[in-house]
Every structure is written in structure tokens, then in C-alpha cells.
Amino acid sequence: GETTKGSTPPTVFPLMPCCGSQTYETQVTVGCLARGYFPEPVDVKWNSGSITSGIKKFPSTYKDGLFSSTSVVKIATSEWDSGKLQCNVEHVATSTKINKEIPGMSSRLRPTTNSCAVPTVFIYPPTPKDLHITKEGKVRCEVSHMESAEDLTITWSRSDNKKILEFTSSPEQQHDGTYTVKSDLKITPQDWNKEAEFTCKIVDPSLPTPVIKTIKKEREPTIYLYPPAPEELGTHDFVNILCLFKKFYPENMYVQWKKDGVLQKEDYYLNTTPVMEEEEDYFMVSKLSIAKSDWMRGATITCIAVHDQVIQKEIKKTRGK
Image (spheres, rainbow, N blue to C red):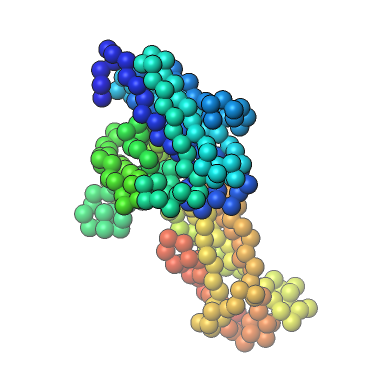
């Protein structure tokens, strides 16, 4: 970056909502990013000061001797769409005045306008190949749909407090004009299996607040399968079999039941939502209803958990009971 000796005027970028994210709302939030100026401050008005409500200015960020800041405004979609919305950025130190139009929906079809100005962040676990074959794992944080990646910072932390070894790629420009940055944190298969937590924190002027993403190894459930209660067998034509799943992470899990190897329709069973039992440990219960006659003749009932892996447990009536 430039040195901090002289003063530097800002470059101004319009920030539009993502395609599809807000296009059907009655109000949208749009913004202007003033980047790479020195010294503070810049003054941002909207439509030469005629818009006074719905404006929010985010604290400026400082990097390599230069400041960046973002001002956003929430306005009626129709007002934005008329194409008459502009931000007026003034940097007194360099006597700079920049007026930047925020293109409306109708002009969004122009190829020069980026489809999206809201960065998306994903965190990915190590691949099975990393863990089992090359024995060199990595957790990846990927930031995409950025208007610019100049002021982006990605920082990693780990719950086991081991040394951080990270490799962050140079920004790659995508076909829609936005940028993507990938950052890899090196870990060993042992780190992953010890259930350490890995966190990346994304700071960028176009994000109102930092984005924090955390990942850790999935834990498979322990399955307990319970036969119908004796009281049920005496009085009902249908009986219930309970399947309890304990100590799994993360919470999303899919349950299936089989009777003599045949998948049962979802109408025949009921699942509770996963409940956190201890920190990062979930449990849930699924209840299958079957005809009492099926149970009495010794049908094999299988409860299946589809999580990171597929785990199942079987039960059937023991003879003589």
C-alpha cells in the first residue's frame, strides 16, 4: 500500500443487494464503500443530503496505512429501482468529492454490474483423502462474492491452542467480476479426531460485523433400541418401538426404520427434534408404530441413523415372551 506521509483520496464502490436476496422486498439495503483513503474522515451523504433516515455508517477499518469505511441506507425498493440513488463522498483532506450512482434493478442486466455485493463465507472439513491417505489435513474457509478483497482479513483460532499454520490464496476474480479468497488451516488427522474446534473470523468493510465460522469433527450417535412395553402388548393392536440416539454432533440427522428389511413409510414413525444434552452433544428419539401381530410373530425391526455415516441397530421379540 501507499505510505502514510501524503494524504490519499478514497476510491468509491457501490454495494448492491444480492440477486434474489432482497429483490422482492419492499425495502432494500444498499451502500457505498469508500476505500483506501488517508487521513480520516470521509463524509458520506445520500442524494446530496435529501435522504436522512435509514442511514448507518460502520466504523472504519485501517490497513497498510489507509482507511476504509462503509455507509449503508435502507430505502424503498422503488426508490432504488428508479436508478436515481447516489452516495456523495467527500474527503476534505484531499478536497475530493465523488458521487457514485447505485444502479437500480432495471440496469442490473448490464454486465458491468456485479451480481452480488454481500460476501458469503463457508467453512469446509478436511477430506477423507486428506485424513486417511495423504495424512495432511486442512480446514478451509472460503469467502466469495466480494466486490474487492483488498481489505479482507482472515484470522484462525483453535480450541486446542496449537500453533496456527495457515495458507491464504490470492484473490481470484470470478466470471461475474467478484472475488473469492480461500484460506487453509493445516491440521493433523489426530487434531481432527481429538474433536478440537477450528474457527475462522472474516473481517471486511462490506460486512457490517465480522463473520465467524466454526467446525469440528462429526460424532456418530450411540443407538439404543427398546421393545414395546409389556403393558402395550396386553391392550393395543399397535405397539411402539423406541430408538434413542445419544451423543452425536452436529444435530442434523436423518432417521429410517425397516421391518424385515423393508423401509417403513414416514407416516409410521415420529421423531423428536434433536436436543442438546451437554455442550455439543445431541440426543433424539424416534418412535415406530407397528402391528402387534408383526411383533408377536418375530419381525426384525431395524432403526437406522443417517449422519456422517450410516449406523443401524436391530431388535426382535425373543422367543417365549
